[in-house]
Image (cartoon, rainbow, N blue to C red; front, side, top):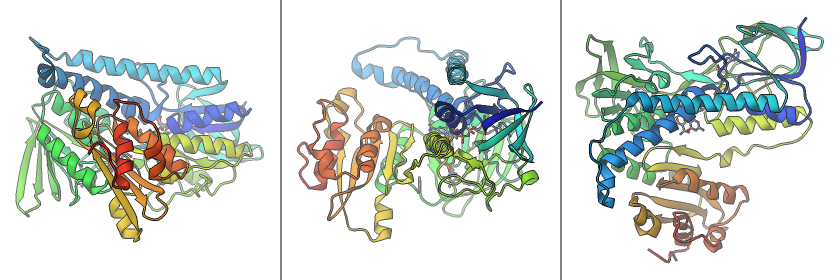
Length: 475
Ligand code: FAD
Ligand code: NAI
């Protein structure tokens, strides 16, 4: 006998599991199906984010940053480290434990909220009188009937044509998070978010890292001043980044991987590395869904086609997160998941895509929200800009972490904050203030008049806002 639910969510990544919990809070009977298995073969809900994305990458970034600090920066604090060593097994084991804690946290939340969890792959069967028939294959094989369905099947790494991932030498984000030894030479194709974060991890642990980027501009979506400062810092740390290259043939050799490419000057080059990370973007997961069986419409790039409210072309079927248009970010997926659950319950929520923050967890961190200076110029918008360097911030000097700045962009007439761009220490945390101000359509003067604790890095935000009106106090 098929099991009947008000809502079946396919995928337990941040989009899916959050949608399931919110729907259960609103009184619906909810099932969530997820295919991911851990190394032990057991269910590992949390999707890409928990298993091979946000969480493990941040665990490795933290461990590798400690190693770098101990090896290169403790001495300036008068702390002598003798016999510094690296136990990669322990470091990776800690990361696995952090992942598992998150998997188990989600199973606990499902129990607490009475969400029925099914471990397996779900596919649409047919439209039935009571809604949609969904077949689950795998450990918890079952037919489910749902009045509403949320598709939250996420994304996977895009491979280069004819260069499949073997997760040994040619690595997606998955293999790049569990290398058995630190490669002497590591190649990275694509200087995007993954390339920079994971390239930084392995560089800090001792690899010589070469990053090949196809685009002419480094971090082309990022504010130019921020990208310039970040490139300067990464280069100083030893990440070798080349832009405007054309990657050619890639061959697995007995020793490693050889990459042929044409550099920015048009010269043919070859890069021999032990391992190669390919991080050139991601593709939506729709192959296992049975989209054709029920006529679920995909767009020209293979994403599930949705309107602004995440409605698909089928009645009662919604889609959220990486499998639909928009930035591939966990918090964007979560906001869509909450909004869809509330819409199904008859509420009228709103997701403001203009205030979705971006963070790159390198050192220095990069974070931004809203428009970049180049976008404002292109839009012909009259704006004022104020910047404040961490070099002039007392807390940053005490931390010994003075690279970077905060930049606030505001409308020239109304002073409304249009964008905030940070490169520097804890940028990931500092950006929250800018998101709040922009969500309330506040002005640069609002930030400037708010009392910020001293000495904190957040004072750099206040000073940058003051600088919009050319009245920074400490610079
Ligand atoms: P996913 O997290 O991909 O989850 C989809 C789930 O659906 C998976 O468990 C999958 O197995 C399951 N599934 C697929 N098909 C089926 C099916 N037919 N039946 C059942 N289950 C199915 N974003 C951030 O915001 N911050 C970060 O710091 C960050 N770091 C990242 C680091 C890396 C290395 C990577 C790769 C990504 C990172 N991201 C980060 C992006 C983030 O992981 C994604 O945006 C987010 O996971 C998308 O959530 P989702 O719920 O849409 O899909
Ligand atoms: P990305 O889109 O961030 O970067 C891909 C880079 O590869 C781009 O700079 C692009 O120009 C380049 N590229 C594409 N094809 C190429 C080719 N053939 N040769 C050389 N360069 C090429 O994608 P990435 O790093 O794979 O990450 C995927 C997504 O995952 C991100 O866009 C982001 O949404 C998410 N993510 C978010 C994180 C965060 O929020 N901190 C961390 C990691 C990933």
